[in-house]
Image 1 (cartoon, rainbow, N blue to C red):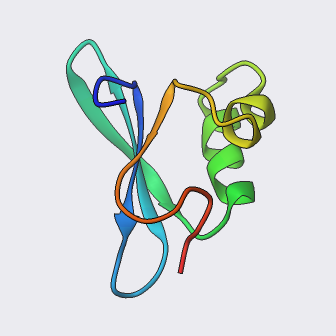
Image 2 (cartoon, rainbow, N blue to C red; image 1 turned 120 degrees about the horizontal axis):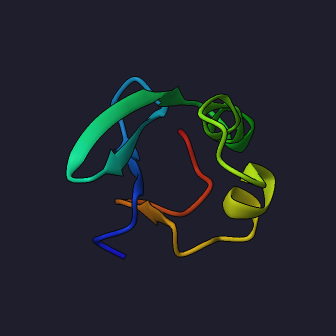
Length: 73
């Protein structure tokens, strides 16, 4: 989903995926995730409700770009 507010970019050459949140058209980098645990923690830190369900339930709120979902290397 192109307009999802949470973007998990393709795997970088050094492994890990940059995680970005888009709010009102402004993108903010939350960090580089090396696992679903990292992604969940980024979302928890910005007080997203039920981050575990969003990540593990493959919510439409998260857009995975390039590669397989939940893969970080």
